[in-house]
Image 1 (tube, rainbow over the protein chains, first blue to last red):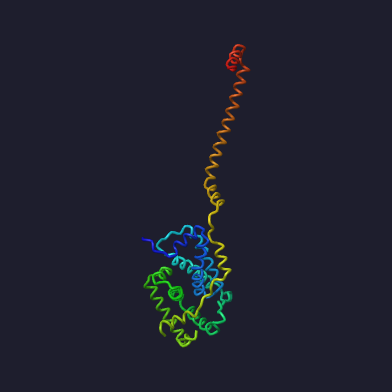
Image 2: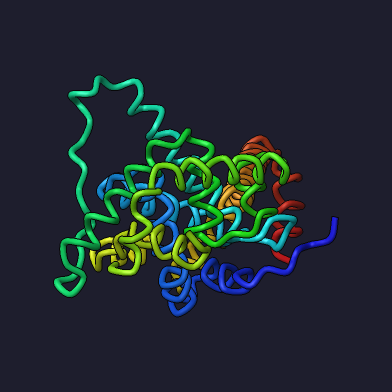
Length: 187
Length: 97
């Protein structure tokens, strides 16, 4: 199979050889993305930080031997992070509700105000209420801005299945947030 | 709701940015450039079994040489001690060359 063109490939290889500039660039480019994915999947800032750190440690472990292959680095990283999130969600389901960690709001700057925070929490609640796979499809395609092929690869499903999950997820979200269409302009 | 407003609404759910502490923790674990001592250490680790085997072989050879050398001396002394007057004269002549 032909190797895919990977915009991160060279950076990963340099980081793997111990180039500190490459490592910094990789962290600047990928850590916010991994953290955002984990946060919107787990809806918990502390757990999201743990997942982001674990995912990046896996990057460092694999970087010295990284060779451009059939998957792009970003796709691989999303898959690693999502699997770490699934582990935590599984553990959460096995834990009694009382033991769940307290959710921490990421916070908003003083300029954004309470209104934006309210709207954000409503959207978060609607997203978290979706079935897991639908939520993942929305998070990967909308928030992480992955293409359908990459998102399908991350989730380990066909592109058709991904499109179906995405379509159902979006429909449910629109239903849940229908009363907010006038709020958008104020955010 | 049009697509643009819909995107705006979803984007109201913001994710936190990585804290400086998280950034520092991740960077601290990044692979380091190979230093002379680490390269030398890696090479030493690669050569250690071979070097050990060679040293053991050399020690065996030296031990063998020492043993056989002392054996030769012993047998020469014994020969001299057991030699008769004629033999002793011959041996001394040969040893004097």
